[in-house]
Image 1: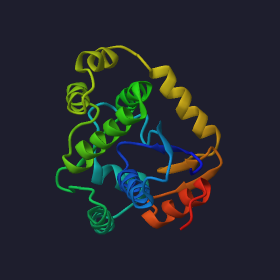
Image 2: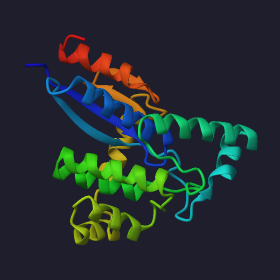
Image 3: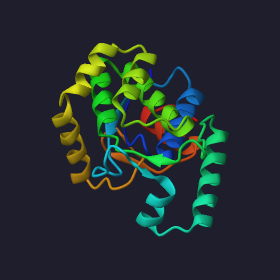
Image 4: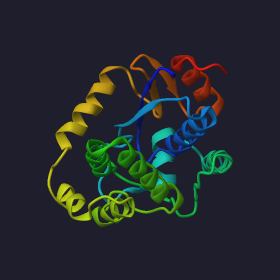
Length: 218
């Protein structure tokens, strides 16, 4: 029997490298197979916590935030699309033309985590696909309710959460916790509360770390 591995996946729905990183982690877990025991938790991080509900055009936002030219944005976007394609992640650069505030999506993810790791994982994947693959507005509450329902969650409870400040304090506490521990970029994947892997690592890197901690021979 392998040793259990706890994974805290610190990320934001609006981050394309988080979608790629999760797909790479999932592939690593699948490649290792049944000997691996994993407890996977998704932790909140907001790339743009002060952004309004209407969002901003991505090109305008990234040019202002990082000083990227139109050519650089196009090159980076195509690299993301190709990298995602190798992992089965759809990143549609035509539809994903805005960036949004993601605080409410993190509140729903916190709620899903209270229900179980499988429910949280399913919702995380659905949110990433809805935004990066379909360009849906993941700050719109009706969109969020629809996504939650599509994963089997209670739509009435999802709407109630979004119409109140439910889980807001818990999400802010988790965000603060990881910020205080030096997390400034995502995805940040923390193994057993001690080992940190950052960025959209390839599956092989995740697999190596998981095997070592679980005591599984390569």
